[in-house]
Image (cartoon, rainbow, N blue to C red; front, side, top):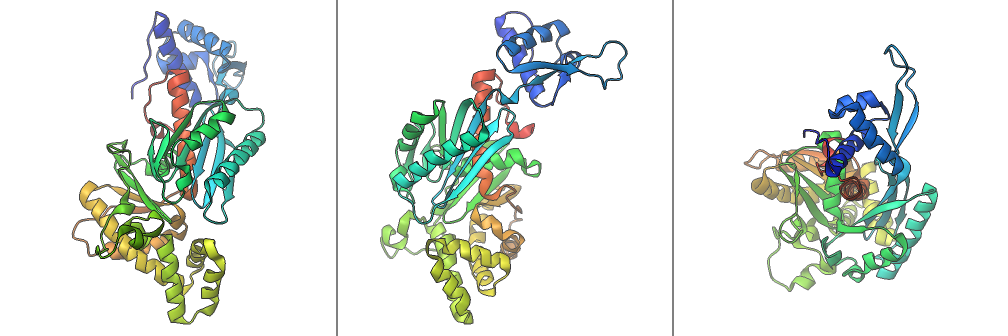
Length: 415
């Protein structure tokens, strides 16, 4: 995208300042002359904008550039003050809570993750959230919080700031999250679906996954997808495009939905999600006579899924057998996505990403007989941290839009 600059009038000066800020944020420091050349403005126009930005605390003049080979007096360097403000990113799931604070360049300066021991109630989630946010902000040191973004499972209405449907944590539906956080943060807060944010976070942080056509599949207890078409995140009419957990590829309608799919699981995630993986692993352990693994699964209780994933990584045969069974089913979902969207890349994220190449090999094997050429498959680089990084990205985008007046260009393209 061409750099947007202008000259004359107050509005044009603001546009110039936005162009200067964007350039400075991409560099550790620059001389005024180099900055003027980079943005295509006169040195005088750049100096005027820099003085205004200095008054706002966003820019500071530093030392002289004594390493320059240029003849004459060394140029004075100027830098963007990334520490002038901070943004907050939060990821909430039935398994854990992740919180991070970043400066205005996106550098994470404090973070924490808290595991939930069992299916948490709303008050437990809210209490842990407020405590963890306060702890992370303290760890970050003196901070001025400019924006916060939160990712949760379920169907979310970002415009209204409400969760419309969240079967695994029904006590969080409505606007309770925003109401409770607004009481303590004192900054704008944004709420969105976790997989949507995870997709944006993955593209931002991983240069290898900045494809203009990709689907990110968050695979754990539940299954959802983030869809990128022509470089843009596709949300659908109700912001729930990609709810592939509700695909009905296997189930015959012989019983009420509630009895066939407990905890509000969709038909697809009922056959490939965490609970089914635990069931398959326990059954495989029983057939193999692996009493030790079976006892570990039973003793793990609510953390049985994590126990099975650990066993996959360790190469336990019964766990590998379970993964192969669900991979065969999951491959059918990928084939449907391929037939409808034909993405170049499918990224596997969420808890199942821990299985790495073992999981990818099983999926590729079960896709071999599909008539259509299948997309490339990769494991998420950020894995379970993708949501919180996507939340940070959204916060930074909103700071750019509302505070800096910068045109939204999809920051995954330039970082």
